Image (cartoon, rainbow, N blue to C red; front, side, top):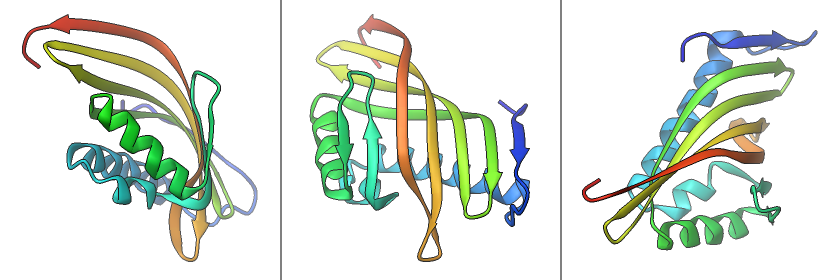
Amino acid sequence: MSDVKITRTVGAVIDNADARRVVENAFAAIARAVDERDTDAFADLYTVDGVLMTPDGALIQGREAIKDAIGRFMEAGLVKQEAWLTGLVVADGLIVEQSRTRGTVRSGNRTTSAENNCIVTHVLDDGVWRMHQDIWNTTSGSATDGSY
C-alpha cells in the first residue's frame, strides 16, 4: 500500500520518509526472523519491557516473554508474516504505526492465514528504534488444503 496517511505532532524531529523507513525495516526484520525461525532476532525488535497484546486478550510483557511467545507461535506452525503500512503518527522520539498484517500458519497439509489490524508504538531506545507496544486484532482468516 503506497497511500499512507502521516500525521506529525509539533516537535517531531524525524522526517516522514525516515519514520516510514523505520517501520518498513521492522516489517522486513519480522518477516526475516519468522522465515529464519530466529526468536532472538524477533525479540530484539522490542524494548526490554515491550508488550504484545494479542486478539485473545493475552498480555505478553518483556522481551524474554515475547521471545517465548514467538517460539510457541512458530511451534504452532507460523511460517510467514507479512505487513502493510496504512498510517503513521510521527512525534518526538515516538512513531505510532497503523498497519495490516497477514500471518500464515501451516499444520500438516492445511495452511491458514489470518489478517489483522495493528497499532504499534516504536520508541527510540538507546539510539535504536524498537517496538514498545504491539496490539492487533484479527479481521479475517482463510484456510486451504494442499501445498503452500
